[in-house]
Image (cartoon, rainbow, N blue to C red; front, side):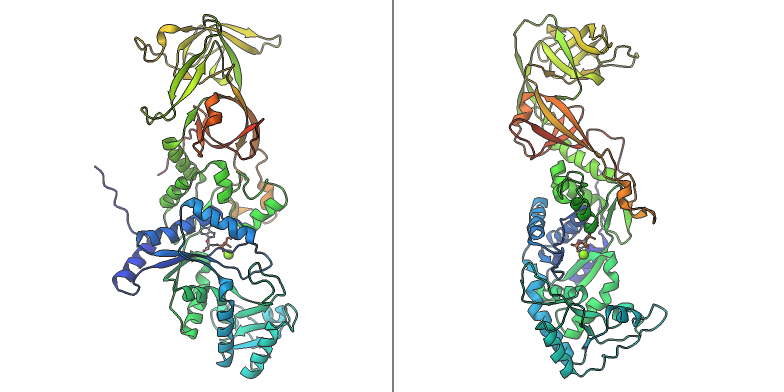
Length: 551
Ligand code: ATP
Ligand code: MG
């Protein structure tokens, strides 16, 4: 047997070293979403890494809302994020909010002011930008930089008490306006924002900046490994500086490559725009890369985790092929999903020798991988639908489905033969007159094989359903390559949703598996919540086959 030896990824190496050397006793990671949108596939990668590492090394993971931007955040998002994480099968240790630390962060800011490490700056945004310098040239000190700690403290308290308007003043760390790293040129710690916060209400009108919040929040919770995406590496020195300056628990930050997927956008800001402009039906539109969207599409948590496992953890940005994700979805559903027959473009088949009014019920496996497993009952009668694509009048030799004077097996049942083609006045085939061979019933007598097997439904029992067939939302493979003179919305796929109809065997409507089902020989579909008593709606999850093979 071939044994798969999996190499450790760079985060696992770091953690194993830290555990071995005794630097940490056990690990505590965190997942830090900003509650300003729904989680997407990129977040799934971050979740799998943070929770996955904790699980592997017997540690824990906190859920921490990074809620320092009151105007963009909402409890709707807070709730949706929890639901999505649970759906993926992860359980956080503590539910935390950066806003829980506002008092502590404020106290630390006062302490820094008293130490001469922070000052209130009255410059406008414009002035601050101008005086910041460039990578080549040093910045200029603010005229307010040398205020005394007493004056700074008084002004900062006035900022807190609402004496000033938005943008009138900021609190800045006093580091070095000529520092080679731009992030160290007196970074802003607090800005004034008279805005209602979804948790702290109107208590605050000053809010801490990301850099002044994130490391300290990690430290307060004693996060051992603070894992984020590569674009945060420029923030790391400042992260370390605040922790060191304040002399608090030394959390450390590590960065990995974010997930980019072909034909997919994963910026919350743009996804929000698609929702607000009505380009999609909502955050959970099945074409959206959000977790609620792919869930409604029929993707499973297991498939997503399989995908995250396959793409691994690296330090180089790369564009992953969405076909790998679809492959994972197929793998998982193939093993687990129930099978049903659905005809989408019907032609009627009439069996001339079937006894009038007779109904025969076949016990068919719900999943062929478990032949001894559960079955569904499928009714067979003298009038059936087959798919138009399974019949050809002038068929080449290699066409092994139904053709005039040819034979085919109806899946799970008899072999039939086509004797006559009935057409309307426009020469369209409307009905096939056939006969069935009663000696070919599976399990009875000798097995006679024919080359083709097709799916079918009894017209008497067929249940009409609505189908929503989805395709990629965008036509551009690498959505980071939208040309300057274009907008990402110029690459929307006009055919990303097409409606269809289907005629299903009756058992489909009673399926209670809760996951996508396979329409035999066609694809995977999942019942949508838009279904009513009158109309059952199915979303296409993914087609059955694809030439794609993972490396
Ligand atoms: P977006 O850019 O889509 O708005 P974000 O980074 O602002 O995403 P956050 O809510 O701040 O979203 O992200 C929470 C965590 O998820 C962060 O640690 C972030 O690094 C990670 N994350 C976000 N997008 C991706 C991605 N595409 N791949 C992997 N991790 C991601
Ligand atoms: Mg963010």
